[in-house]
Image 1 (cartoon, helix red, strand yellow):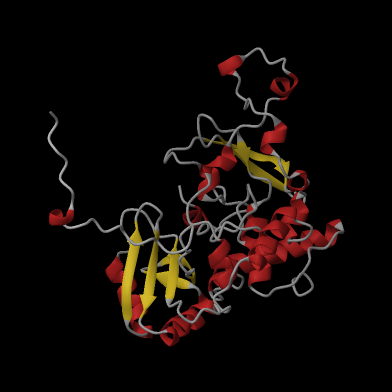
Image 2: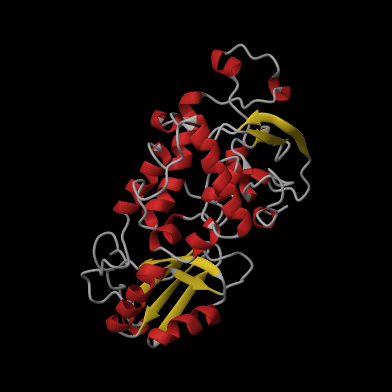
Length: 337
């Protein structure tokens, strides 16, 4: 079951399958989904919607969709975790990377009649093909999205909830308890991240997780920030897929258009590579080109940044090895008597 395959079905009030990301579906290729017709209401448009419930793993909690398919398609989001289906980032992060502001986007009306009319018009435009949030997001690549995107599913988000009785020291189930036996202070180190609202996350306003990601991205180095050390001609390439899908030859063919590539060092364990150009001008041209569009090799989006200078050894330079005297100058010890 794939999220991109689900988006193709636009018949009826809701599609026949939920619009969810690969992380929410879990690692198993077979997922049993319980379907209930109009069992709850959408948390955004408040219309009655079809509810799906599933368990993405034996050690995971039960999950369900919180918004309807129309609202999910309108923002190109997962109907369960409300993250972007392509980049797995919050709406506020995606809009900030694409240069969109909350003032320039149509806001869903608050009154019941106007909200119902707005959702009906959105549903008709999606069915007719006039509105496609997925094509809109892909047509404008961004370095920030390529930097913050998650290339692999994070199944840790599907873990079971914490056991409140274990925190009090009164849980008697032991290993048979379906909840996690962890203390809240060890899991929720940042208390502000727990204060989230579904409507705020959907519209991209007052999202503490998105604000934390944007603060971390602003402090990270950018390709436009050329290092002052002119001897640095190496570019770091991270996020390489496992299995050797992107080889050293593929990287060489891609970066050779910007100049002579002096060396390529690839690490399979760390899933990264270091591309060294012959001159600094060639490295700056490669960084300037990928600063806006990001790096994509063989259809795989990769992270790219300037390499760092090698750190000096502790204690300064390595001391020269001590020279041993020639054999003829070594004093011969007398044999033991």
